[in-house]
Length: 134
Image 1: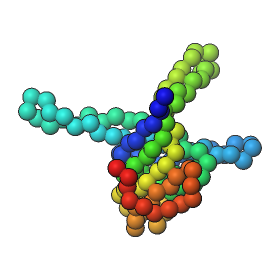
Image 2: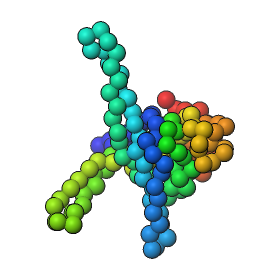
Image 3: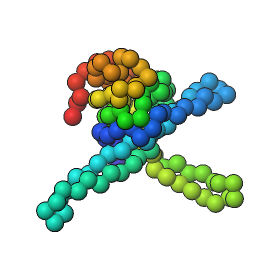
Image 4: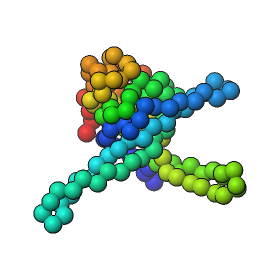
């Protein structure tokens, strides 16, 4: 079976990160993507907000991004489950990002280099520059 997601959109906040006792880290953000369609002759934009999780090498790259940055991500869909303090079960779907490309950086981006060029960061390879594959 295939579990692959590709999205292009804007980050809705600065990336939040956490370092665990074993030294591993994780980062989280949300991407806003728009679906545009016609309704009664008028164009309508319908935003969707999707949670993102970054692991490994991509944590530092994600922390360099800011609210409003336009990014392209590739990853897979994962269901997260947890119990709240009252013992109630909750779940949500997130995209676990395996590659990240900045398309247009917000002027307040924390990493100067992000503002000047498109970068591809892939959790499976070292940092490299290349054209957007889609």
